[in-house]
Length: 158
Image (cartoon, rainbow, N blue to C red; front, top):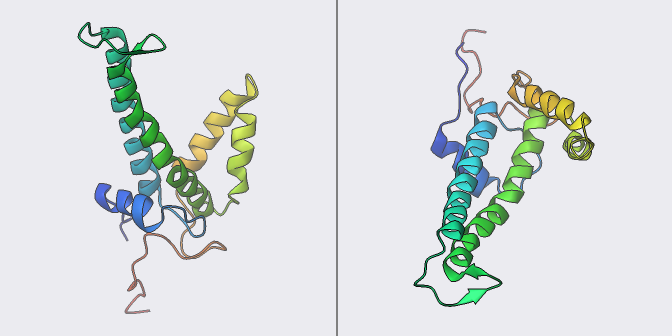
């Protein structure tokens, strides 16, 4: 049986609309990594836009707010809004990804705390990366049914 994966649109729809702040259930690897890619790409796009407008220092903008041109403030706003809009779904999809591995979502808090400790954060990042890359529990686990199992997954000739 071939493993089913979630497409880009389906993963973003799940994370940003259907399960925006849902901490119950499970998230497939594809759902987690597609959303992670979306978040990194958005932060890189808006962040680089703000970075380059700050260092461009356009002479046409006369208004200043703390030595930053108005254009920089206008490009920082979408970056901050994007981060705030994707923070809750990022936390929830990570918790659901841990659930797919049959782990408690509280391990995410352990990761955040150990990530703040110098030198230990490197080990924590590697461990967390491998946990999120590994295949989830097949079938149902204590956190719910398989996220990629469709409604008609029963074997016809069982």
